[in-house]
Amino acid sequence: GRDGSWRTDYPRADINFSVRFSELTRANVSFNSRREPNHLLVNLGGPELFSCPIVILSAPGAVSINDAEGLNLRTYLLKGGFLWVDDFWGSYEWDHWVREIRHALPASEYPIFDIPPEHPIFRTQFEVGRMPQIPNIGYYMRSGGRTSEQGADSAEPHLRAIADKSARIMVLITHNTDIGDSWEREGDDPRYFMMFGPKGYALGINAFLYALTH
Image (cartoon, one colour):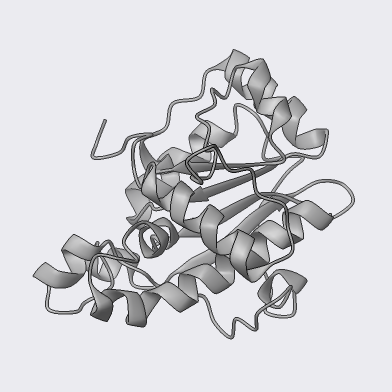
Protein backbone atom coordinates (compact mmCIF):
# COMPACT_ATOMS: atom_id res chain seq x y z
CA GLY A 1 0.00 0.00 0.00
CA ARG A 2 0.85 3.73 -0.40
CA ASP A 3 3.58 3.22 -2.98
CA GLY A 4 5.54 0.68 -0.93
CA SER A 5 6.28 -2.99 -1.55
CA TRP A 6 8.68 -5.74 -0.60
CA ARG A 7 9.64 -5.70 -4.29
CA THR A 8 11.25 -2.28 -3.85
CA ASP A 9 14.86 -2.49 -5.14
CA TYR A 10 14.55 -6.30 -5.39
CA PRO A 11 16.36 -8.29 -6.72
CA ARG A 12 18.99 -6.15 -8.43
CA ALA A 13 19.98 -4.25 -5.30
CA ASP A 14 20.54 -7.58 -3.51
CA ILE A 15 22.52 -9.01 -6.41
CA ASN A 16 24.65 -5.95 -7.15
CA PHE A 17 25.46 -5.28 -3.51
CA SER A 18 26.44 -8.91 -2.92
CA VAL A 19 28.82 -8.78 -5.91
CA ARG A 20 30.47 -5.58 -4.73
CA PHE A 21 30.62 -6.83 -1.14
CA SER A 22 32.50 -9.91 -2.36
CA GLU A 23 34.89 -7.76 -4.41
CA LEU A 24 35.60 -5.01 -1.89
CA THR A 25 35.85 -7.06 1.31
CA ARG A 26 37.15 -10.45 2.36
CA ALA A 27 33.69 -11.63 3.41
CA ASN A 28 32.41 -14.90 1.98
CA VAL A 29 29.42 -14.43 -0.32
CA SER A 30 27.42 -17.40 -1.58
CA PHE A 31 27.08 -17.73 -5.38
CA ASN A 32 25.02 -20.19 -7.42
CA SER A 33 26.17 -22.22 -10.41
CA ARG A 34 25.56 -19.24 -12.73
CA ARG A 35 27.86 -17.09 -10.57
CA GLU A 36 24.92 -15.05 -9.35
CA PRO A 37 24.77 -14.28 -5.65
CA ASN A 38 22.21 -16.29 -3.76
CA HIS A 39 19.53 -13.87 -2.59
CA LEU A 40 16.66 -14.82 -0.34
CA LEU A 41 13.22 -13.49 0.48
CA VAL A 42 12.26 -14.03 4.11
CA ASN A 43 9.08 -13.55 6.08
CA LEU A 44 9.31 -11.59 9.32
CA GLY A 45 7.20 -14.26 10.98
CA GLY A 46 9.04 -17.27 9.57
CA PRO A 47 11.81 -19.50 10.95
CA GLU A 48 14.08 -18.72 7.98
CA LEU A 49 14.73 -15.31 9.54
CA PHE A 50 17.08 -16.99 12.03
CA SER A 51 19.35 -18.23 9.22
CA CYS A 52 20.16 -14.65 8.19
CA PRO A 53 22.65 -12.50 10.10
CA ILE A 54 21.36 -9.43 8.20
CA VAL A 55 18.01 -8.66 6.60
CA ILE A 56 16.88 -5.58 4.68
CA LEU A 57 13.34 -4.25 4.69
CA SER A 58 12.68 -1.82 1.85
CA ALA A 59 9.87 0.76 1.91
CA PRO A 60 9.09 0.43 5.64
CA GLY A 61 6.74 3.38 5.34
CA ALA A 62 4.18 0.87 4.05
CA VAL A 63 5.05 -2.18 6.16
CA SER A 64 2.52 -4.01 8.31
CA ILE A 65 3.84 -6.01 11.28
CA ASN A 66 1.36 -8.06 13.29
CA ASP A 67 1.93 -9.23 16.85
CA ALA A 68 3.20 -12.68 15.85
CA GLU A 69 5.66 -11.21 13.36
CA GLY A 70 6.70 -8.63 15.93
CA LEU A 71 7.50 -11.32 18.49
CA ASN A 72 9.47 -13.31 15.93
CA LEU A 73 11.40 -10.23 14.83
CA ARG A 74 12.11 -9.21 18.43
CA THR A 75 13.46 -12.69 19.21
CA TYR A 76 15.65 -12.59 16.09
CA LEU A 77 17.08 -9.16 16.93
CA LEU A 78 17.78 -9.97 20.57
CA LYS A 79 19.57 -13.18 19.51
CA GLY A 80 22.02 -11.11 17.45
CA GLY A 81 20.16 -10.36 14.22
CA PHE A 82 20.42 -7.10 12.30
CA LEU A 83 17.60 -5.37 10.41
CA TRP A 84 18.23 -2.50 8.00
CA VAL A 85 15.19 -0.48 6.91
CA ASP A 86 15.68 1.80 3.91
CA ASP A 87 13.85 3.92 1.34
CA PHE A 88 11.08 5.85 3.04
CA TRP A 89 10.44 9.54 2.99
CA GLY A 90 8.75 12.28 4.97
CA SER A 91 6.86 12.48 8.23
CA TYR A 92 3.88 10.30 7.26
CA GLU A 93 5.99 7.28 6.37
CA TRP A 94 8.22 7.85 9.41
CA ASP A 95 5.28 7.87 11.79
CA HIS A 96 3.85 4.74 10.17
CA TRP A 97 7.16 2.86 10.48
CA VAL A 98 7.56 3.85 14.13
CA ARG A 99 4.09 2.51 14.95
CA GLU A 100 4.83 -0.81 13.24
CA ILE A 101 8.27 -1.49 14.72
CA ARG A 102 6.79 -1.01 18.19
CA HIS A 103 5.03 -4.37 17.70
CA ALA A 104 8.53 -5.81 18.10
CA LEU A 105 10.49 -3.31 20.15
CA PRO A 106 8.52 -1.15 22.63
CA ALA A 107 9.58 2.47 22.92
CA SER A 108 10.00 2.28 26.70
CA GLU A 109 12.82 -0.26 26.31
CA TYR A 110 14.25 0.46 22.88
CA PRO A 111 14.33 4.14 21.91
CA ILE A 112 15.22 5.31 18.41
CA PHE A 113 18.29 7.56 18.30
CA ASP A 114 20.38 9.43 15.77
CA ILE A 115 23.72 7.71 15.18
CA PRO A 116 26.48 10.17 16.16
CA PRO A 117 29.24 10.95 13.64
CA GLU A 118 31.89 9.28 15.83
CA HIS A 119 30.11 5.90 15.68
CA PRO A 120 32.22 3.14 14.03
CA ILE A 121 29.55 2.48 11.41
CA PHE A 122 30.77 5.63 9.66
CA ARG A 123 34.29 4.25 9.26
CA THR A 124 34.22 0.44 9.54
CA GLN A 125 35.99 0.27 6.17
CA PHE A 126 35.28 3.52 4.34
CA GLU A 127 35.19 7.04 5.74
CA VAL A 128 31.63 8.32 5.37
CA GLY A 129 31.75 11.98 6.26
CA ARG A 130 28.02 12.66 6.16
CA MET A 131 24.75 10.84 5.63
CA PRO A 132 24.00 10.83 1.87
CA GLN A 133 20.59 11.67 0.47
CA ILE A 134 20.05 9.36 -2.49
CA PRO A 135 16.83 9.67 -4.52
CA ASN A 136 15.44 6.97 -6.76
CA ILE A 137 16.74 7.30 -10.29
CA GLY A 138 13.37 8.18 -11.79
CA TYR A 139 12.82 11.11 -9.44
CA TYR A 140 16.38 12.31 -9.93
CA MET A 141 16.04 12.38 -13.70
CA ARG A 142 12.54 13.88 -13.77
CA SER A 143 13.31 16.61 -11.24
CA GLY A 144 16.46 17.83 -12.92
CA GLY A 145 18.78 16.57 -10.21
CA ARG A 146 16.90 17.18 -6.97
CA THR A 147 17.37 14.68 -4.14
CA SER A 148 14.51 15.23 -1.66
CA GLU A 149 11.60 13.14 -2.89
CA GLN A 150 9.06 14.79 -0.55
CA GLY A 151 10.32 18.34 -0.82
CA ALA A 152 10.66 20.21 2.47
CA ASP A 153 9.17 17.27 4.38
CA SER A 154 12.18 15.08 3.53
CA ALA A 155 14.92 17.65 3.16
CA GLU A 156 17.29 16.11 5.71
CA PRO A 157 18.47 12.49 5.48
CA HIS A 158 18.77 10.60 8.75
CA LEU A 159 20.85 7.67 9.94
CA ARG A 160 19.11 6.33 13.03
CA ALA A 161 19.10 3.13 15.01
CA ILE A 162 17.67 0.98 17.75
CA ALA A 163 20.22 -0.74 19.97
CA ASP A 164 20.13 -3.58 22.49
CA LYS A 165 21.12 -3.24 26.14
CA SER A 166 24.78 -3.57 25.20
CA ALA A 167 24.57 -0.69 22.70
CA ARG A 168 24.83 -3.03 19.70
CA ILE A 169 22.78 -1.69 16.81
CA MET A 170 19.93 -4.11 16.06
CA VAL A 171 17.94 -1.93 13.66
CA LEU A 172 19.60 0.49 11.23
CA ILE A 173 17.26 3.13 9.82
CA THR A 174 18.04 5.20 6.71
CA HIS A 175 15.22 7.75 6.37
CA ASN A 176 14.73 10.37 3.64
CA THR A 177 17.11 8.48 1.38
CA ASP A 178 17.14 5.42 -0.88
CA ILE A 179 20.46 3.67 -0.38
CA GLY A 180 19.18 0.56 -2.16
CA ASP A 181 18.64 2.43 -5.43
CA SER A 182 22.33 3.32 -5.58
CA TRP A 183 23.01 -0.43 -5.71
CA GLU A 184 20.07 -1.45 -7.90
CA ARG A 185 20.66 1.21 -10.56
CA GLU A 186 24.44 1.15 -10.77
CA GLY A 187 24.40 0.13 -14.45
CA ASP A 188 21.46 2.25 -15.61
CA ASP A 189 23.03 5.68 -15.99
CA PRO A 190 26.67 6.69 -15.46
CA ARG A 191 25.73 10.14 -14.14
CA TYR A 192 23.50 8.66 -11.48
CA PHE A 193 26.11 6.07 -10.55
CA MET A 194 28.96 8.56 -10.24
CA MET A 195 26.82 10.88 -8.12
CA PHE A 196 25.41 8.27 -5.73
CA GLY A 197 26.93 4.81 -6.23
CA PRO A 198 30.18 5.25 -4.27
CA LYS A 199 28.33 6.89 -1.37
CA GLY A 200 25.70 4.16 -1.23
CA TYR A 201 28.19 1.33 -1.43
CA ALA A 202 30.48 2.89 1.18
CA LEU A 203 27.67 3.14 3.72
CA GLY A 204 26.34 -0.30 2.82
CA ILE A 205 29.67 -2.06 3.18
CA ASN A 206 30.33 -0.29 6.48
CA ALA A 207 26.93 -1.32 7.79
CA PHE A 208 27.30 -4.96 6.74
CA LEU A 209 30.79 -5.26 8.22
CA TYR A 210 29.57 -3.67 11.45
CA ALA A 211 26.66 -6.10 11.63
CA LEU A 212 28.83 -9.14 10.93
CA THR A 213 31.42 -8.21 13.55
CA HIS A 214 29.13 -7.12 16.40
